[in-house]
Image 1 (tube, rainbow, N blue to C red):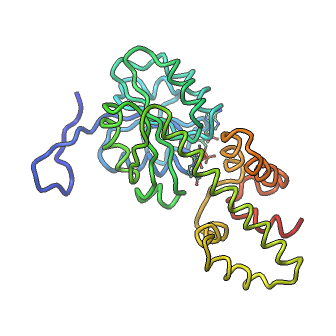
Image 2 (image 1 turned 60 degrees about the horizontal axis):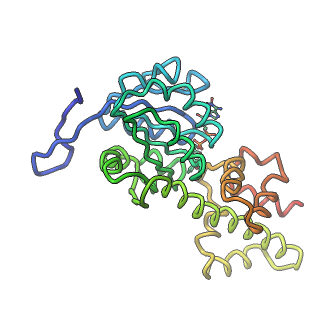
Length: 278
Ligand SMILES: NC(=O)c1ccc[n+]([C@@H]2O[C@H](COP(=O)([O-])OP(=O)(O)OC[C@H]3O[C@@H](n4cnc5c(N)ncnc54)[C@H](OP(=O)(O)O)[C@@H]3O)[C@@H](O)[C@H]2O)c1
């Protein structure tokens, strides 16, 4: 039986169902997101591969234990291999009526693989996000949601707590849009890094090149390339480019990211300094 509370801030006496949630994956994004759901009043059980990350939240020993009795399961893991592996440890435990929301960036092919393995009566919504650790903590993410309409309706109150929800269409459509958008951003940041290295070679002062680039259509990309408060590891950016398939520009950007293993755990903006040193 869900816990029913008055929805905060509403003037009408509407109610929201505070469904019991299992949250799997307490990385740099998952932990602040799980905390927001707990702070909203959802009964919450968390699980992470490496134990001890729960920071006061109720922690289960296994994925199967975490999802038992949960109405909603949220996964926020590094990529397709991780989600597929963890799903193999909990999917059989999901009761009919459970809603699984995968918020990891895994692309539409892996998403449809998860859907093919769903137990009867279990629904899946793909809901990857844009925005980094700051927005994850404040509910400022942008969520690309794909799924059946009724499942998206049910996911809405959970997703709204985490950010602005953009409904993309049917199953897999959120996963697909995420690949498109992040591919453009990551490759563009890499291009900015490269042209700033070219500026150095040509004797164009860095500040001048950056200022003029930032005054044109690449303004947002230049800002992202010099962001001081994002924490999106180069390792995950390269993974996202791989999800886009074999496009020539995206593949070239991925090679650039992978060419300097020393920045794998640093934010994407580290590629700018790395390219200047090559
Ligand atoms: N960071 C960002 O700014 C950002 C922004 C938007 C979207 N995203 C996407 O959001 C997702 C999570 O990103 P993140 O930055 O939170 O990544 P992260 O800090 O690297 O965390 C990854 C999580 O996945 C778990 N994991 C990895 N492999 C696993 C496996 N084989 N089995 C079980 N658990 C596994 C990790 O567990 P351990 O703790 O045990 O390693 C950790 O909980 C990714 O898909 C990423 O592309 C990230």
